[in-house]
Length: 248
Length: 242
View 1 (cartoon, each protein chain N blue to C red):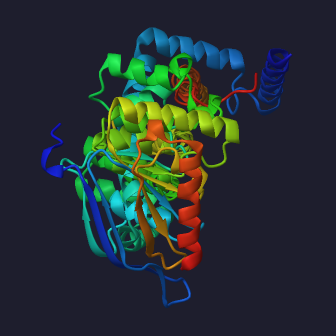
View 2 (cartoon, chains in turn red, purple):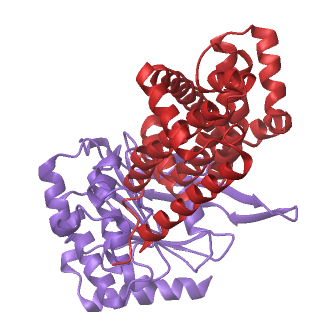
């Protein structure tokens, strides 16, 4: 039943797209077939795989760095009031700085380099991850902490077995919102200052007014991100919540 | 482990412990409290609810360092603690909960421990799948698995039904009989601990002081109902005399 509804919804989406294409003309909105053929053509030439790969690598790198740093910052701020007081203004500043400003400044200060591109993405994601993990760190169970202390568990063991499982829901929330945010920002970073990747291709297509190519790259990339969600994120969440009693 | 020279004794001397109240000002919870528990001895700490027993335990196990006084722990100071709530990691199995606290514990020792406590069938279960009685047993298993020099129990049988509490007390007696360990056990119920303890400390209401330090001469196994009644009477006389 669920699957039927889902398929019907997708069919409706395609129908709306097709109708829109007829109304607006193929130049403004090419038909689904045209976009599909463009995806196949890009795939044949190898350009699609290359650009998707490059963008995905940037997403993975920026996402991992931002999550690790964000977890560390969030934990420190959530557990130590002094760190929280000192860090909070920085956090507020970063949270409210438009993504575009960070990207442009990174490129001006560090040049049109890979490092600048990654740093800009990380700085955009970092404050959000920090805020979410900080909430989690504030909610840590003191009783379990004391248990770990009296049984002399080492730092790593405490982090791995006592703290991290409590942070899991917060990390999952940060990852979910983070992944979609990061890939959108990576595209802008690529558009503004990288010679490859999905963002660069879309930028080129924009200059040539090639809507077919824009849609081809966008849809291909969305498909890849959905696959990652289904193949990596959801199984991982199921695995880390295996201990929760489920209704029989 | 050497029992010579009584270096496995627990010696506590607290002069004063107070909390800062949220409204400002201080609330004194412990007055002058001195305890001495010999190596391998089981001591029970009894006093009215809210008199500061848990605070005293927190000081002894090192969770609260803001007090006037000294605490001398047994030789290596390896602690086995059973908190009032089981405090198990819900995301780890029963066995992993024990192993994480006691990485050095051998397979045979763990088998024996789980066997005595009737947990053999639950090793792969998560704490969320256990009853409170079973969760308390796991907490007990964890405390014994570290082979502690000092065992500290904070109302380990509270909120269990009477029958279950008696059974669990029997299991605890069996465990300490097999491997003697200096033990401090807190309770607000005289009957609960009187069959187990070698020594009873009676605390006053807040701020807590030691009203009585009563050694119990005849050994646990030879204690008759009449002996238990006599001890109970002596304690209630002391409590009334305060």
